[in-house]
Image 1 (cartoon, helix red, strand yellow):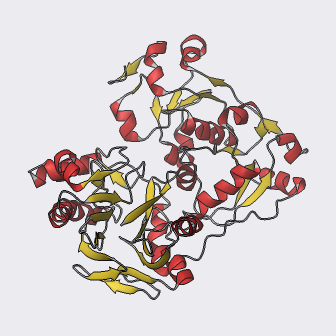
Image 2: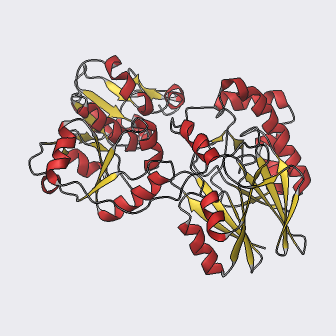
Image 3: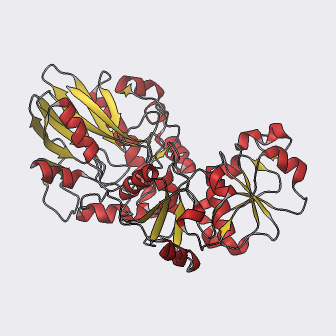
Length: 454
């Protein structure tokens, strides 16, 4: 058995190509299936089966597209009320796949109908594909179906991961879908690249905590905000998403781009936040595109769902951004190629705002200017700048009227969210300064911080 990992770090997820050297199974395919196709070609294997661990809430699946393209058997829980043809599978069912054997294990918790899969080779080697059930160090979050289901799902999660560990055995390799920066994980998940059931039995709190009531209380206490676009993912996945549109459309001309800016449409600048702050098209917003930026998660969380988007940036960034956005159902945004605002729309006004570090906050900020912290509420509660106002980035558009008067000095944990927030504030007509520095650097610079970072 060989397992090929297809990572999607932008969402904190993994897909898997599992094969015996001849035929392959794909588990939890992302919507941009060309990466999986490439992995199958490189391994010289034929995709005969595609499986879902659950109806995903954080991305659109490519499972249906992939299965149809290869005439593969599409394994989806029989209890999921999907609107497309699939091979229904239930708890305990075994499916032969070449020289491998797949067995479904019911593991409710992340969703009510969640399945994990134990794949066994002819020589007895086992691999566990746990989706949003057992993760490295923790488990998948249990609140995505709403507060009425959360307590029950949390109790189910505790029982499910223990059943899965018992059935697989300590030698089995563990391959979760979530937990690599995904908002679908909760608790002390780790950044480990690999693990086994045996290792998790000694390190994962869901397996080491002997008291289910303590586990439930602890997990519920750690649940934090998650992206609003999640609400749209499962309904689309239940109907079967079409193939991802990955090409760049014809760009709007300069006059059309100027009109969109003037009319308040969403124009998203993908350049680095430093370049944006120094010179950008007035009314554009900054969603810096780059590795590890979680660009699509924050854009999908902040900009109202369904609004027309125009992206501007380099061709490479635009192509990558279109791919990323397709994974969360934001299809066919317009795209204008260019990194010089004056060349993109010569007749449109430009703008800028200051970028500073924490030392400038100490030395230059007038006492009456407010500090705005756009981190999540749980981050703020743990530690924050004395006197700062907390409005999480994902709530900012709806709470602009609550902000204090004066020039706003905005920060986050690393500078990324502050860059987005500064552009949104300026777009709304506020005078803004972006604090482009890590929060942990505030106290050493002389800023009064309340909490552990102080």
